[in-house]
Length: 509
Image 1: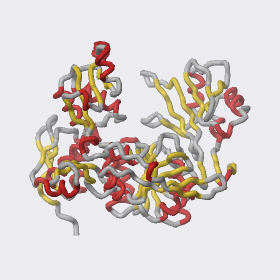
Image 2 (image 1 turned 90 degrees about the horizontal axis):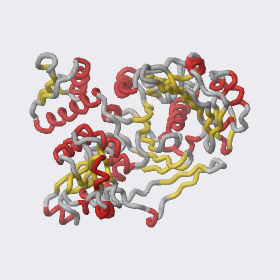
Image 3 (image 1 turned 135 degrees about the vertical axis):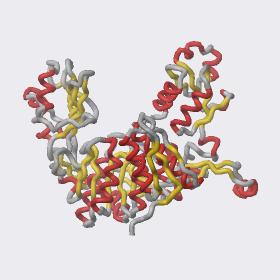
Image 4 (image 1 turned 30 degrees about the vertical axis):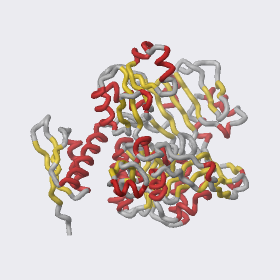
């Protein structure tokens, strides 16, 4: 453990990471002068071993990595899970594998995990209020580090019942005994990343926590589980994909975390009263999280204290005015508020039209593009006028057919290129362009079930879902049960499917 300015203590168990390396590489790494700043060691078959630091990288040897080197390291760490991640017991280090088509390891990333004590002071008062708090920020900025210390402070200093839902052992380290960095908080491991939402619900139902800590909410199923937990009165501390609050609002998968967005058509009288267009964007529901913290840097944060109010104002086109907190080198906390001339309007300023971006198609079947947009729930609409478009989508082989004049016309617009004129190819192109990962079968089944439940609740009519496997049908039945609705399976395999009924379940006394 070492001390740095402002009474921050860092422990990294670096010797245990070095010891898993082949002896000649371990000796070369120990000789590095800035070893305390080491980020990761890269071992790729047929290449020189690299030690990476914040501002540089160095080769540890002139020789190249062999299968024997990779097997040596793999044999000295924990078992690799389905996500190709392993660790070193009782440490926070992460070892990630790259495999060839036959499943053999051909590369390893040995990333240093550090427990940092003392950084939570900048938001301690926020955490201690008991409000559900969501932390946003770019990868590697220190969100998980913050989560560890928050879990420790709530469990040790405030004596709360804290459960950490730990996917890939990111928060509390490898092995069955959690790392001391989380204090007396309890840890529930997640067997596979796609099961994180199940473990979140299990934590609430089985272990009566006052606080649940979760790293990286990234799917609709996890967002729905978070809302279920919050509705039961449990404080949530979590991170999510996205850098800022307005990014999250525009993310169709995760916007529910901050209340979701819906288009509302106003009456003529109401539109005149508000001095707006008839169709406006409004918050759909109460937010799951009360507070959103944007990590600008490790010790510079923007805090949105009342998410519901902030989102409402942003949808009206008013820029947010978060509290900026900076932890200075001497440990003092400086608080700032941006002046009006520093504020910028959110990307969706000006009611519905700017929020729903216009997409111009060139050489593509419009119906197929429209279907891909609907599948992904993207805030896009098709336009026949290129001059009003925010994006252009076309086939890759059409790019070289653009005339010089057309290139000048479209020079200011992002051009999305799809490999084929099919719904699947367009969907793949849009996913990549808007940073959306492929939905798993389980996520798709749960999303369909959730949409069906909403239709049943809104229109009081039974809904049939598409055929699914027995495992996925069981998950859909469980989701209906959580909403106090009855459901049955109908049809024969392979067309057996769930029907959600407009009948309330009898609650147990």
